[in-house]
Length: 254
Ligand SMILES: *Cc1c(COP(=O)(O)O)cnc(C)c1O
Image (cartoon, rainbow, N blue to C red; front, side, top):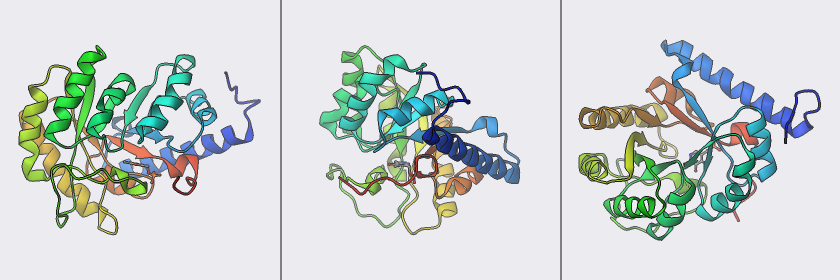
């Protein structure tokens, strides 16, 4: 489907306006700290929104798209991907170990690698799918959270929260480096709810520097959403995950 500017429908115009506003925010935030906006990628998070919106976004030039649930991502993108220009699909939700196999068949980047078990599961799954996967290590920026190694994944709007404790990051880096199909891209985090995003993303920048000390190619920092992308840019984010500011509010949780 081609969407020339002339006969673009109302929803396409809305998406184009919203994309423009987000890119303006990115430019202003970059200017404020002397960063080049070319170093930032906006990943448009399409969870809860229909295939028609994905086609519109692709028509508007969006090439980086994000989803956070395996079932929704696999069904939505399986059918339309062949019609789209080449896109990069980012999986940004918690990955249950038994979903690794599915996620590895379609995701180009998995942002939420946060435990040793998942390194093994994704590596095997990527091998089976004969693909390489770029992975980011999700860092827990909440200093107060008590946590267990195999806690049940959360669901809902907070589902991106989770991650590995910063003190355990070097071990996870070593495991990814020892894998055969996983390429370590960098780190990812969600700022803790109600906390100061500048503090959180400052901590993430420190962890990112530790990761780069042993994996110099792991330069990605996936941080910043609709509400806190300026703070993320101040602290070196390279990839922003933006949903609401582009697509509008999501319907209440299913
Ligand atoms: C949904 C989601 C986003 C996008 O959040 P918005 O506030 O809608 O921009 C970003 N990151 C993760 C992990 C998400 O699950």
